Structures are given as C-alpha cells and as structure tokens.
Length: 148
Image (cartoon, rainbow, N blue to C red):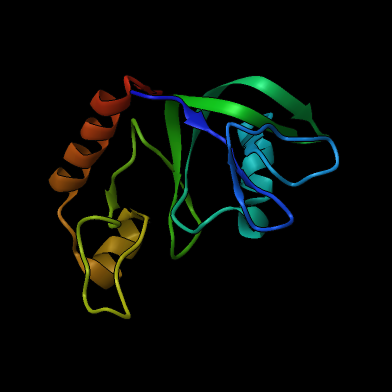
C-alpha cells in the first residue's frame, strides 16, 4: 500500500532516490496511454508473462507519443494477462489462467515465470488454477486494486 517511486541512477552510478524523470533521460516509471499501445509493444519493452492494467501517475511526468514516464505510480486495476509462452492475451475476469512466478520453481535454471493461458498450462505444466486465482486475489487485496 505504498506508492512506487522512481529510483534513477546518475551517470556516475549513484542512486538518486526521489529524483524525477528529466526530458532527456530514460529514467522514470513507464506507462502506456492505452492497453492497445502496451500490447503492440509487449515484445520490445515488457517482460514475458506481463499483467496489463491501469495506474495512477503523478509528480514529474514526461509525455511521449505512446505513453508516459512518471516520478510516482500506483496500480489501480488489472484486466489483461499475457501468456509468457504463446503471448495470447487473457481476460482476467472471464478466461482461465495460471500464475507461475511464485508457484513453480523447477531448478535454479528453469522456472515458470509469469502468466500462462489454459492451453499452455495444460500442454507444459498443469499448474493449479485455484492457486493462481488465490495469488491474484492476494495482489488485489494487498494493493487495493480492481480486477476489470
């Protein structure tokens, strides 16, 4: 239940807690303007198995063509998951999914990491759906967010 604050690294390598995204830097908390923009760029800028939703941004904000870089952010809602294997989008309210980042760790070199659609879960892992729904409920309760 705390805001996420940008933590920039200076050119000399020192952390600058509480600093803000400057116009000519890459520092900041990135957010797309729409889910459509996020999904179009998921392979370029997002980690596999991503959750997509809405955030509140405030403080110093730099606007760009498809999104923003902000000083502060807090999650508001989640509505889409992206399967970490096939990249299929998953509606969190109406489609089955599993969350593997905390559930299954096979070895030090291999683990399920992120969202899985029901097809990939059935084909490769057979993780428990009920556990994943409980994980999402914990995220919802921990951050006070909505599942849309």
